[in-house]
Length: 330
Image 1 (cartoon, rainbow, N blue to C red):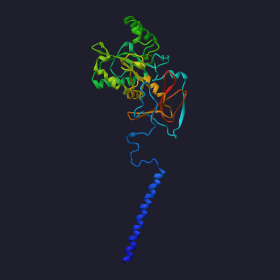
Image 2: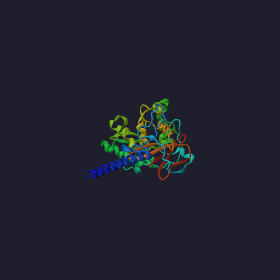
Image 3: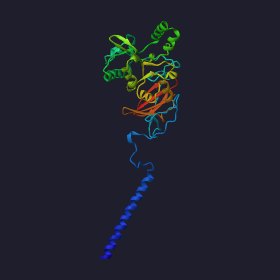
Image 4: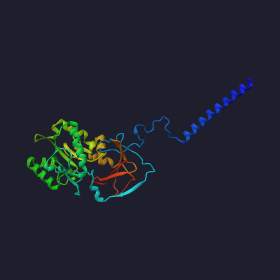
């Protein structure tokens, strides 16, 4: 009986040893076959993506894209299609840069009469009759956002789209009132104004029919802090005069669309700096951003046959200088 118990004990010991050795063997085999396995269970937490670090310097201060705006190499299994654009399209789109070095190239623009299509009861000057049609819904959303957040309806749209004759008339008036030198410092020459694009607006405040400077009211800072949510940016902020070559204009806002307005705000970039920064990104290594639970990829190309990921939504804008900015929405 004692020999039987001893034999049984030895059998159990051997069985347990075999199980332990088997478990160790399977564990070593798994690690060998999966060298990148996430043993701590942290992979992908909070939506993080393991991407290559951004090394392209941005204009002026060498600032790099912040977390959430990173370069990454496309997965090798991504299929691409080719989209063809015209060389003339370099002068069209929501991201065209119009300044003293990049004149506006006249193009057909689908303009809407603001008073005819607006859905929010804000005031519009007769001189600010039109805006690019594709921008109107976002513009109305922004105007309503201001009213909802502040309880005020005091914003007056003083200027929007201008043709060349409109710009010349403004310049002539300013020359007569302030002299040629000061007028040219404050007023763009015809052909060099963002207002030709139909994407820019100027604001004033109107109370009881009396107009006031936009920046004189603390409540108007809502636009500076929130315009990006609607795809707009403060185009000529204080402190960027050496980049834009335009005096600070706290009343002038420009539509660039999302995610561009968000990326510009996160980096403290004006449009000149953003255009320059984007040149460092390609279809295979795009700038990645996520805003409002939507993922974006942005890249630059000089080609007119543009590769984009198959089955993706994309937008292509010229930069009015040397190429195209492509925005992929995931």
